[in-house]
Amino acid sequence: MNLTNKYLLDFDYNEIHSITVKSNLENCYHSTMNLDLSKSKIINFLFRLRGLPFSKTKLSELTQNLKFTLLEESKYTEFIYGFWAKSKVEWIDDKKEFINGGKDYQVKSIWSFRFVEKKENECEIITETRVKCLTKKSKILFSIYWFFVKPFSGLVRIEMLKLIKQNLLNNYA
Image (cartoon, rainbow, N blue to C red; front, side, top):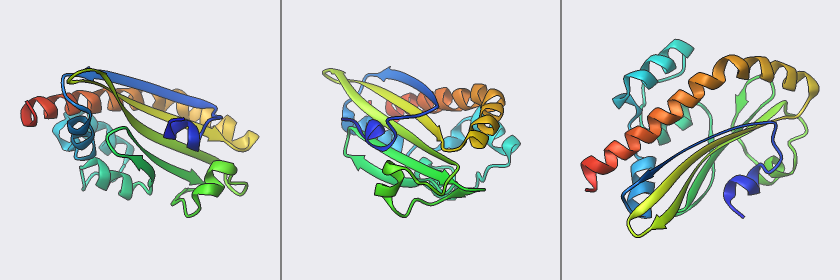
């Protein structure tokens, strides 16, 4: 079972994007973990438009600013971030509670990157977001939010994958 399914098998909303690159798993993993989002004008614009903190532009730093918890990583195969929210996004202190429900929360979400070797020196990088609404009210509110945000969320992830590919060409070719 991959980490994405381990942490959030049952979900209400999800989004998946992928890209295949000519590189090995290790280089793809490091390139993603060290991704500098400031290299994309589109990401920069969209993050500033939404008022998201963008002073730290590395993926690992940005997730910290957004209170995304690194839930688990399997070296060179997958890493996964998550958060849950009552009225605002909160750190995940108890990973088992996150997996098993999180009864006091409105929403829980994961964001993963998986790395799949397709053939020698070729890797597919897959990013997936999953969201589970834990109350009827949160599902209604999130559906409205997702209607407006999903296209831009997808654009950010597509841009991220392009940046990763470019980074691999520049640094690992």
